[in-house]
Amino acid sequence: MEKRGIISEYLPWLLIGLAVLAILMISIFLMKGKGLDFIQQIKNIFHG
Image (cartoon, rainbow, N blue to C red; front, side, top):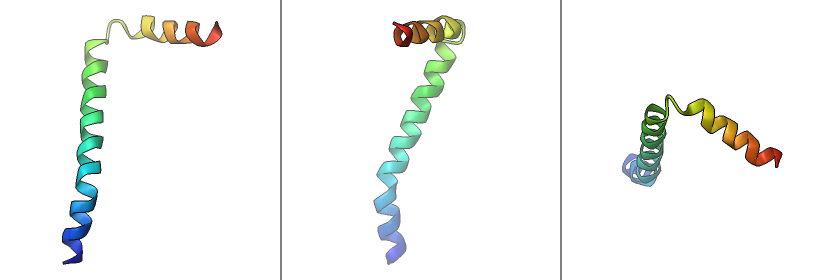
């Protein structure tokens, strides 16, 4: 009985985590060639 409650409690968080991981992996795959330019843009934002 308790195991069912634990699974139903953590299942939404597990699904959210998997969705975020999938989005990150897809974005890294799509931006593979543009990765260095993207990192430079982020550095420029923080340096002013």
